[in-house]
Length: 285
Ligand code: PMP
Image 1 (spheres, rainbow, N blue to C red):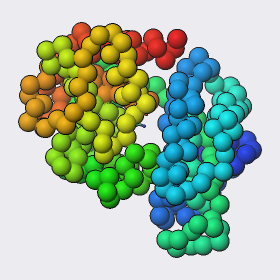
Image 2: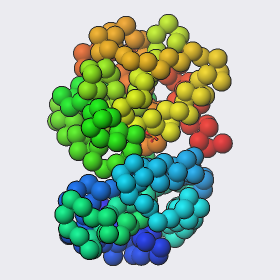
Image 3: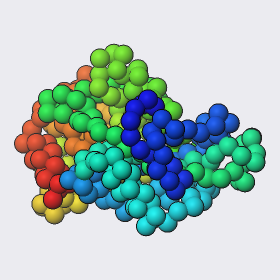
């Protein structure tokens, strides 16, 4: 991703893509002092843009890291980056991290917090699985307790086990992995939240130790407005057999049907198709 044409917004200025560099002693590279956002721009408008900028600042706070920009300034940066690249439809990646500087150790309160906003064109996250249904393996790694890590932050450190889980799943022929949480409840995929359908009602894991996705919240609100009952609750893996349909939600994943988790299979049913279509219409509205 480093060798291409384009512009990246870096600490207040637009720089050439190839020149958007950091030093090898960047604190974040050694100690994961990094938080980020993934957003999608549709027809020139970033869906839930301010919510994403607010979450970025919140993630920074949760990591005791003051990001030196306001929501309005982050909004400006994102649109400046999109304009400089001539994009109306793109994925937007903002990342804030502790840079190289005064200190090089666990403590680095004096190191400047940098902000970078990049973007790229990104189609369906699960490729052709988008309509046929993604197949998920089950990871051996568990989402950690909120007492061990700030689990509501979209922080780089929380993704170490996601990358390992996804690599393992892909090597076995799956699109992604489902992760359980530290108590053994069903949690989420490595970059998306999970929903299940049983007897016309929707069940989704309670987001008490993993990211309560903006897409997740959007889809829950959309379903409830349509009169569909949504249960946010602890779900045991033993319950998977009783669910008829399943889908994933996330900014990158949007709504993606799931046809299999481990040995359990799901139909890509009417409600799954409707949610997928309704979400697509909403983000472009
Ligand atoms: N969980 C994880 C681990 C994620 O990386 C994402 C993507 N940001 C989500 C859930 C979904 O969040 P959102 O809908 O806000 O993109």
